[in-house]
Figure (cartoon, rainbow, N blue to C red):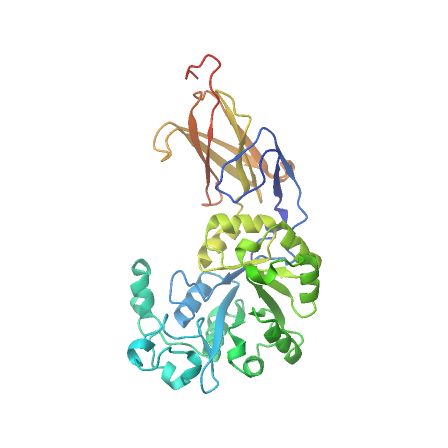
Length: 408
């Protein structure tokens, strides 16, 4: 999304420890930075609102979709199931029990599978009150009695509220349960004049479903989803070369994403959209690797992160002596970086602060040296680009003084 600055991201190479997720302390005597070839294929990194802004509202409801649009998501993702009378509805689970009051309204219809209910019956359900009970800190009276939307209602909302800027990202859930699902999706998209829309993706774990969609609509962009078991023991380059015959990208679980996966995907011109990324540390780590988009419940966090330069690599500490230490970081754009250290983990006392500029001339690498430190003492550090709220934390231990004292 938003910023071409993502193209500047690099990977951190260290002599004593590999790069790890932001927030972890990386210790090394020598720190080296090298340019990476793992950059997004797309010109913008996509923010994909997973089931809508589902950290803030009941998933797969119009309220959650609207919230995602207000938070400037690039795409709203919706899951599709199919009713007994062949209607496509937005619902993640194959059953209605978790996110509606079907159990109370239809006590004798266990296990409350979507395929056993008509659309008219499902329209009677409350699909929002469960969220207020489960997440009282996010509760909103507007969520009570939210209904289960149809595909058509979801698309209408995205088109109207998004003003043509918000894309549609559809997942076929359990397509094997619903014969004819793919035909219904393509026909519905065609009737609503969105089938040829640039900002449209359809995703699935089912290769068979995706290949059928490709046959029905050759130009539609498809994403092959992956769980860990689906890639176990496979050669990534060979797998992605095969997948590129029908898909435009891959959607791996975030735990699967590393340099080898991204390199193999990009070499086969496949986008990489990992799921589901809900912490800022994970967001930064994956951006630094060169992903093309991220599914997230926390739409606003990823949007805000991408709007301004942030610390994309580090912080790491090196050249630690009994009285000094150097902190290093790398940003993804021109900005000033503030480093703080303290012997107090809460940073309420004994704080030392230094700032320095990261710029293109120095490849966005920034470092500061703290002197006058106590020997054999644990110090906590935190750092952030002043243009961003994203903060990286860690710690280091100064060496013992040569005479065994704690003097600085």
